[in-house]
Amino acid sequence: MQKFNIQKIYIALVPAFCIFMVGCAGPKPILYPNNHLKSVGQEQAELDIAECRTLAEHYVSTSVEGEKLVKSTAMGAGVGAAGGAAAGAIRGSAARGSLTGAAAGASVGLIRGLFRLNRPSHTYISFVNQCLRDKGYKSIGWN
Image 1 (tube, rainbow, N blue to C red):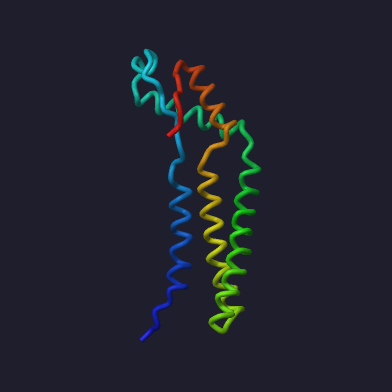
Image 2 (cartoon, rainbow, N blue to C red):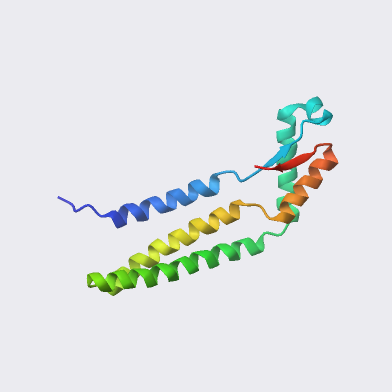
């Protein structure tokens, strides 16, 4: 009978969770129900929001965001390795604890970084809001 191994389950579930989180849509603008929104309808407004977001993604640089994700993952791995080594030393295997801690820390750092990536920058929000204003909408916030 095979021994239950929580580490293998954890290693299998973390990438799936990360992919799920990246696939989740981030915040989007909330539109004030002005005359333009009432005349075009919600379906057209959603299409216009999508168009403005696509334009913002094209014109607003996102190269710094990837670097932040790498740093967050590396920082999580370092903290996890240190904590895992300490816990492993108590249990008798600092090296194994360090590896387990590094894997767990990197996963936490990656997830934390993905949540931050999911939040649009102020420049991105301003770009989308201006695009929507140009189309006749009024954004009153993001949710």
